[in-house]
Length: 137
Image (tube, rainbow, N blue to C red):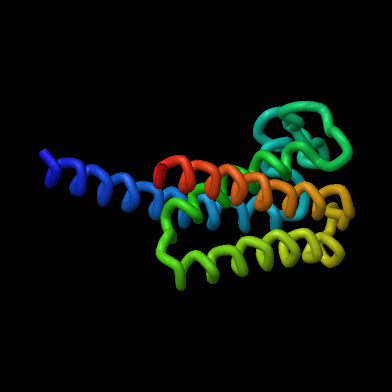
């Protein structure tokens, strides 16, 4: 029985790892594309960005995306050394991708988008730590 749980846990982490890497590639493509890929597909207008919800103080879409991608990263790379690197990577990619909008046609750097990226990482980190602490108890 205990062996089945270990195998299931390993498979779950393997799936999370694949999803994390696939989501990273998709995220980079979406960020670096001049215009909105989703706008092209949904509205037939590459200048329109779909919104899941209205923005609050920061860009809501950015918060949601970075919560998901960060959580997958934290689940995938839980050991201490990898965990530190994944935190560094997530903050780096959230800043780098938003700054890249200064140089990409039809895209623009916005501080509220950058804040949304960073807040998404922080929210995900907080949720992950709470779940880890609850699991230990």
